[in-house]
Amino acid sequence: MSLSTDTRPIRFFHRGQIAEVEGAATTRSLLDWLRVDARCTGTKEGCNEGDCGACTVIVAELAERATAAPGTLVGGLSIRTVNACLQFLPTLDGKAVLTVEDLKTIAGGALHPVQQALVDCHGSQCGFCTPGFTTSLTACYERHCEAGTTPSRQQLADELSGNLCRCTGYRPILDAGQRMFELPTARLDTAPIVAALKTLSEQPPLHYAADGQQFFAPRSLDELATRFAAEPQARLVAGMTDMGLWVTKQFRELPLLISTTEVDELRRIEDGDGVLRIGAATPLEDAWRAIAARWPALEEMGLRFASLPVRHAGTMGGNVANGSPIGDSAPALMALDAALVLRRGERVRRLALDGFYLDYMKNALEPGEFVQAIEIPHGDAATTVRGYKLSKRYDCDISGLCAGFALRLDAQGSVAHVRLAFGGMAATVRRARSAEAALPGQPWTEATLEAAVTALAADFKPLTDLRASSGYRQRTAANLLRRLWLETRVEAPLPAAAISVWHRAAA
Image (tube, rainbow, N blue to C red; front, side):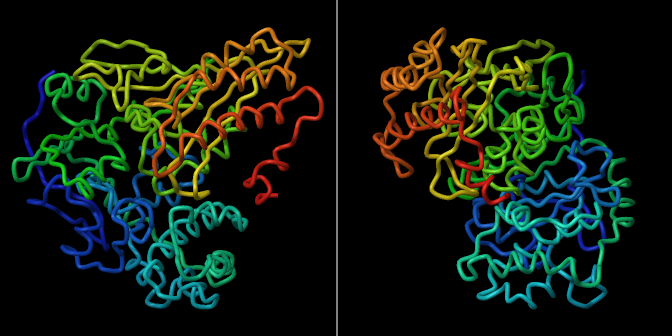
């Protein structure tokens, strides 16, 4: 396959027209462009690392090329909130960007229902976080108006998981989220955006260059494989939820970037023939919805994974390939015996996730090789699956410890199958093989559990860091095994409402 060398500007829809960007660094953030170049200063810079939500904006793309869950579709568009501080400008090519400044146009010069509700409910105090909350609530408003539904208070809290406020205590903001649906409706006119995006879709794939940096966005799997095999020194990018911090916090140079998110084959979710197959560039939000649809007990883990804007941008393949020892997806996937489909040029191979991680931030990928998909076998319907996360904050926080468990009992109540995978306990996400070995064939009793807990001590020697001490990790890992037993014991297993904060809040 021949590779094009032609370059062109970045083009996206913003403030009612197509914006064209040339000369900006490939790693220039959308936030910097909005505030400095476009002079749209309503979007604020807080943490500059995707934690606070002050820079939240809405990114829209054509519904027909999105792999979004139906709940994100509005008038021919898929709309998602993202952190502008993490998004490199070239990734916006062919999309639309909506900011807090657009609400005046939507509402015909008056206050938008979201803004009016925040005023009525005293949802703004110092005001620095207000534009981010307003944008997140606007996306929620549009999606629910489109569907003809009204969110519960817990659903509103989940929508705002990526927005932090130091003043209000959140109650008046949640009040505003309910109040906005009681006010006269003001909806986004999607027709001009759809028309503009259809025009932009006729452009050739993006190859952007500036100041010695290059950014490629191939649209086919073959083109991506050929490009990366030819230039294995390039960095693959997807949601930038991790790589964005390389630039904003570590000031690293990234001269050659290849995006995976324009390849439709990498954004597909297929469920059939006994396997759930998730394309590597599938947004985390969509991937976790698909996983939770088949294994409902993992729904809470998906909701606690980062924040909604991070899950909208970040991808399942990126989270897996990044290989953080505290990455939230790997323990659950490992417990489910997931395998990776890897590609290098024309060669495709499968590798069990359990064998993918070699050492701290090191994996089995060869130069020019990338994750094409994650395959999760359906397994036995009688298998109980659990995902647990321990962190200092409930939402939008990095795990101190995370775990994924799978357990199946036979007709006599003995352990027939078990997987115990932990993150935060070693240099990589790993299975607790000694603890696993103590269980098969044993009756699922408290004595058997305690034998596994004793064996667990030989599996890991965790370190102490800012998130948790070694002793805390050892103790809580053992307690998560005890929680698994309490939830699955043969007699009187505890219901989710008795042990899950999320289930209690949703009840």
